[in-house]
Image 1 (tube, each protein chain N blue to C red):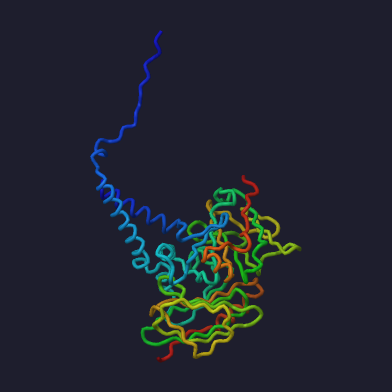
Image 2 (cartoon, rainbow over the protein chains, first blue to last red):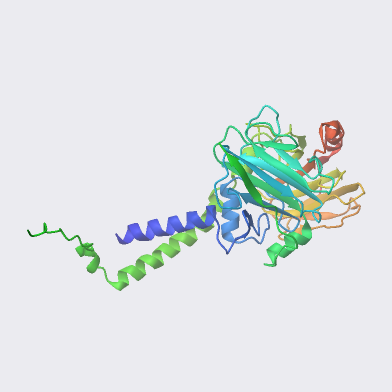
Length: 187
Length: 198
């Protein structure tokens, strides 16, 4: 019993801290979570283990932030059975951004349109400068990001913004909130 | 008429639990903590590194290779921004240093250098409204992060010290659209990393 509790507890807690993260290594902004020291040589052991175990090679979080979302803004799992809208309107300070859809293991989701992401260069904007990205299984007008073929979706929002990166690393708030992920309808 | 007698269920702790002393519990917690710390520290060493091992199989040493754009089943790494082209150089500094020449043509382009564990020890982004021509020498012996938010033009005598003899140089070129693909690819193909005597 002694050994089981010690071994099981030690390994399970390590696995959780490495895979899911905690307040020691991650920060959340609405549905989006980022590993604050990702890619940095002075990263904490949990962040280093997370990056190595998942085969990630991120740009240092001095320059760029990579946010992950597996739920919408109301906490429901993002899945291919629903449509979602993301209004990109608060990212003006970023030199470049990218919003991409993956399955939970980080693989691209096959689709006939061969569209896997939108970036600040490729997205179509409204007259007021906002960009509305629609995640859906079937084609939608405007910025349609297909999410069919995978039951569980992971969204990755990459921001190249050194000022925001410094704020997040130092525990400060971001100047503007990250885009909300609104669930529109489900089948 | 009497109501039927109801069975009363009570949660009883197993008898052996009462025999476990506080010393045993404290010992288990302590040992669990040690296992937790060891497991966390050992992962980056033992796993060293899924990403690097995967890319090492397909990349020659000390040569820049332009990869095909990521597509389903052909992602070089998980969760990599897909609307970009990538040029990669697997460096090996055990014999020679390395001369790196890259043009960061547009905003979003970035040059980064990583250890096999994924530590990004050097990063340089493109600058707004200017072409950032990067020319530097990568040698062994560094241990800190370098970040150039405003690099301008680096002379060929700029020396970056890598904390490990092996690692990866990644040039990311976000695609502005299909029309720009040929241009971006041409710029990436001019990027180079080649050994120089030290």
